[in-house]
Amino acid sequence: MSSKFFSIIRDYYQNSPAYEEIRQFIVNEPALYQIPRQEFSHDFLNTLLPLLGIPWRPSSSRRELQPVYGVLDTINPHYFRSEQILSKTRILTHLKASQQELIGTSLIKFIQIIRATELQSHKLGTAEMQSLWIQIWTPSQAWAGFSFLQSWNIPIVASLKGNRCWQRFKHGKNQHDGTPDLWMKTCTEEATMDIVSADLLSGAFSGELKPLGVPSICEDIPNCECCPLNQECLFFVQKISNSTETASRTKTDLHNKSTAELLIEIIPEASIVIDSLGVEPDTDSLLRHLDQKTPRELFLLARDSLKLTGKLTILLELCKRYNEHKLVPGKAFQSSVDVFRHFQHRLRELKQEVFLVILLDNKHQYLTDCQITQGLLNKSLVHPREVFASAIEHRAAAIIAIHNHPSGDPRPSPEDIQITRRLQDTGKIVGIPLLDHVIIGRDQYCSLADEGLMQEIS
Image (cartoon, rainbow, N blue to C red; front, side, top):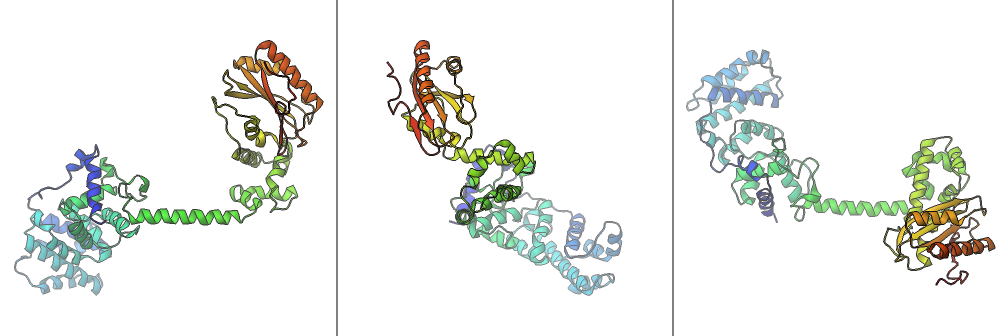
């Protein structure tokens, strides 16, 4: 599994339009050049001192630390004694003895590196030298120290974010574990390319080259769903497992809560409405009680808060739509059951009688539905002119009438049958037949066509 990490990342970039951009950063043959000793040594000290906890400022500190800078400028790396270095650091009396010792030992190792490499760029980043560099800094300082080398374009394996990407992939850890030498060992053992290219590609994949326009996936917030590593990545596997477990636990916890508790979860201020409503907070009919309130009553329960009233109104509308069978243009009604399923939750709790008409095309497929009238309780006034005006406007070929009974009893009244007959007669005249008249109760319905209460349609 491990070796796929670098090859998948390489394939990701080779198949990307950005591959030509990233190729310029990949080192096939290390550049050979001589690094200027004084500038490099001073830059090293400028990096080292803050990491050792020694305050450093270009003006004042340089004067106080002049013996240290001076010894790096003048000492012969091929012929020196460690005591020469340590004696210079002991002069720094403004520092603690422990700090003097740290500077001294770090300088000795640095001079050993100068002696071994002659400050030739391609030698400074070898595995042997990397093991010496790592001794200069503590594990917590190593990544910052190696970034100093990268700033000199020394081909060294030191991608902190690339290592984090590996830790996610291999161990499922979302953290920077390990030191640069361990990361180099990983690149050496796992990559099928040179280790510097492996380091650079994994760093690019983790966002280190994003400022240069190179696309990345495994950034501080990883885009795991789009990552080509996710089939093999332990971090992603654990993430999916944890998400599934959390979702399952959350669903169980929510199931055990009362309706009032759930309502307060999403609308905290709804507690004042529940208190004012005067029903038991754990009753399943809480939402139904709210839905039965007029807009004015709901506004008063919300203590004149338009914002809370609006939130509750939206929530109640969403609840109604949960079991609603959404109609789309072109869908045909198979029976009166289809009509009931779609309009049941929309109409059954209304305190006023609402009359709608469903408009159909010549294949009896759904076009749209229109509200014709809204009356007080059972006083819904329906005129054929209003019904067929909508039908003619939408060029309907047939219609279905539908209205609710606020009492909850869907049995048709004599007035319902009379209105149905009038609509049927008008439909015959205008050439737009009435196929059915469906009455919605609380949990039941009545189809006048199913009950044989409509005239036969030729």
